[in-house]
Structure formats: C-alpha cells, structure tokens
Amino acid sequence: MSQVVPRITVMTPGQIAEVHARSLEILAGTGARVDSPQARALFARAGCEPRDDGRVLIPAGVVEWALRTAPSEVAVFDRTGAPAFKLGTGGGGTRFGIGVTNLFYQDPLTDAVAPFAREHMASCARLGDALKGMDVVSTIGVLRDLPPENADLYATLEMAANTTKPLVLLVSEAAAFEPALDLLEEIRGDFAAKPFVIPYFNPVSPLVINADTSDKMAAAIARGLPVIYSNYGMSGATAPITPAGTLALLNAELLAGLVLAELMREGAAVILGILPAGFDMATAASYYGPETMLLNLACGEMMAHYRLPHCGTSGSGTGWGADLLAADLFWMNHLTSCLGPAGLAPFVGGNFDSLAFSPAAAVYADHVIGQARRFAGGFALDEGSLGLAEIAEVGPGGNFLTADLTLRRFREAAFASPIFPRLSLEAWLGRGSPRAEDLLRKHTVELMAAHPAPPDRADLLARGEAFIGRLRR
Image 1: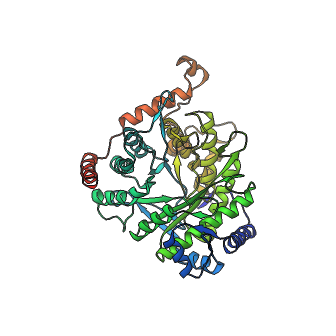
Image 2: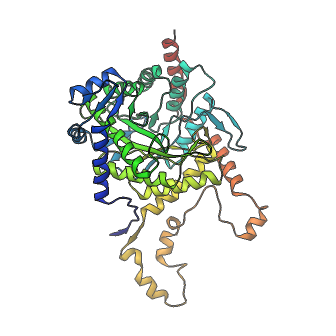
C-alpha cells in the first residue's frame, strides 16, 4: 500500500555535519564548567583536560565514544508495568505531556490565578490521565501550600496516585530528589526494569553543568533509570542572538551532558533536547516564536543523526489563558513537532512562560494534537482508497452519499471534536450565538469532574503519606 506522509525537513546532511563539527569545536576549545568535583574527576579520568577555573575541555574522541555507547532507543512503561511507548529509532511519532513546574493555577472557567496547591496537582494529573493526546504527565506545578522540604514529595505522590501514565519527574529541592524516587519505589516497587518515571534535568546555559544537575543525574542513572537532559537558552541573553549560534552552543551542551551520563554508567539511557527561546530586550522577558520551532526541529534532526532519543519544546508560552495567544503557539509547536523528528514534548498547558497552568489551555492543546496527528498520518494512495470503480459508476453529476466506500468509511473520515460542534450560521444563532471559548471551558470543567481517579489511588496515597511521615520524623 502506498501512503502519502507529509514531513518537514530543516537541515541538509551537510548542515547537520557542520553543526556537529562546530559543537565539537566549542567543547574542545571553550569547554564546559563542571561544578561537581566528582563529575570533574570522571571527565579527567576519561582524558578531558581540566582547567583551574572549573572548566573541562572535552576532546572529540570522548564525545564520539559517548555517541557510540548511548542507547538509540528508550522503552517507557506505565505505572502498571504495561508498555507505553518508545523514544528514539523505534519511536512512533511525537509524544506529548502536560506540565511543567508552574507556580500558579488558572481557573478553567475564569482564568483567575491562584498559587499552585496540592489539590491542583491531583486534579490536573487526573486531567492528564483523561486526555487521549497526552502520553505522559510531567510535574505540573510547584506546591506552594506545603513547606519546601515536603512539597516535592507530595507533588510526586499526587501525580503517581492520580494517573497510571508515565511520569516526567522534576524536583525543585535537590535534597528531595532521591527521597522522591524512594517514595515511588515504596508505593510501586522496583521499577528500573520497566521504568515509568523519567527524571528531567537542566544544565545552566551557557556551558555550565551545575552540581545539583550532575548529582541528580548520578542518583537516577545509578538506579538504572533513563534521564532527560535538556537545556534552556535565550537567544541574545544566555545563547548567541543568531539561530545558528544558539543551535551550535546548545547542541554542544547536550553532548557534554551525554558524555557525563555515559561516564557515570556506560550504556546509560539519555534523552536529549533543547528549549530555545528568544529574549525581548524591551520587556526583559523570554518568549517562544517561529525560530524556536525551527531550532526544535533542527535539534530533533541532530538527535536523529546521532541515533539518540529526543525531547523538545511543547508549546507552553506567553498565552494569558485559554486564549488566541496560547492557541497560536500550540498550533505552531504541535503541528511542526508531528511533521518533524520531535520525540517527546512533555510540557503542555503552561501560560506566562510556564508560570501558570491552565487546564482549559491543556484541553485545547489536546484538541490540536489530535488534528496534528491526523495531518501527519497522511492518507493511503492505493486501489482500495482511489475507488475508481465507484467514480465510474456514479459518473458526471452524481454523488457519493450512498457509495459503498462512503458508507464504510464516513465515520473515520470526519474529525469530530468533543468540544466544538459543527454549526451552521442558523444553528449558531439558534443556540444563542455561543462563544467557542465558553464551550471549551465548560467541557474542561465537565471532564475534570467526570474522569475517575485510578482505582488504587486511596491505597497509594495512604502508603505514600505513611512513607513521608516516617521520613520526616
């Protein structure tokens, strides 16, 4: 069967080779500052040149060794141990998730903003569980109604108890990272063989591997978990103003992180990606725009060239709620991600540069993801799909309303939204001229109220609460 499959390609093979060469030049000549003494020692033992200012110069041969050593595919499971998806060479398209580490919660009906609290984590994790387009649930917010020493643990517990989907874990307090993994093992058992948790780490651009990041990486890799190593660079501020310079720098940082991971344990599974942003000199604010999406795809192509799993941008940005600003970025990010080589896009639904999580925006993004995946899926071009016999039978001036192919396929052919009905002008007027935004908000509230928690939620919460209580005595 012939399949028409639309795709976006950003760079030529020669341009990919150029970016790789320039990234190696950065690592060998400028190097990366490595704050952890233990991490610096690993680099030094591998033949990297340490400098007195904490920098480490990483030769091309060490990078090439790491590229050969790292797995090209990561299998991810859900909390029950069932296979969820794969990232890398065996992946099946872009995977999406809601998040990430927002400080505020936006009411789905009014967009009123409140400090993100434990109850919000529970309800939003269940929302992520309900949305078919979301493959993972990331750490959606930072709990601000609990002391910092406990907030990460309760956030982790609420995520695990309110969804069975895989988790992307971000822990704000460094001291809480290993206890959070201990908590998950307490309520789920050893999950290294079938990981449903992927810890997420950020270095500091430009070219700094901070101690917290390397320490957390070491702890996760020692447990056999796959990790996400992703950097955030603002062009003109923490990265060069040009897209080319930003790509070369951020790619170099990813390669440095890959080397460190493989030095920690040869064969460690690492998912790499960039979060490129612009920096508005007038407002001193970061933003995502067209260049962000280009660089996201360019990074995906670099990782495909390296045969490494990729984690990219998700469309969280400068929306003010479930509004046109948010929708603008959702469409640009989700469609280009599905048409390009983007692997995992785990941070959907944040507004104000991921400061406020909007359930209504996340639901709209899920709507966009469904259509983007249909577009990226293309269509069949074969004898059965062409229907030449039917065309001949109907002839000029006829119709295909009762044709066999129509009757067999009309349900799958039409995209049906659970949010937005298809209304004629007369039907719209007859319903009182509803606003699409109001239908979205109503659907979001109903979905959040109706979707059940996992059946073992109460048990997990009880066991998790007991573990945290013992830990804090």
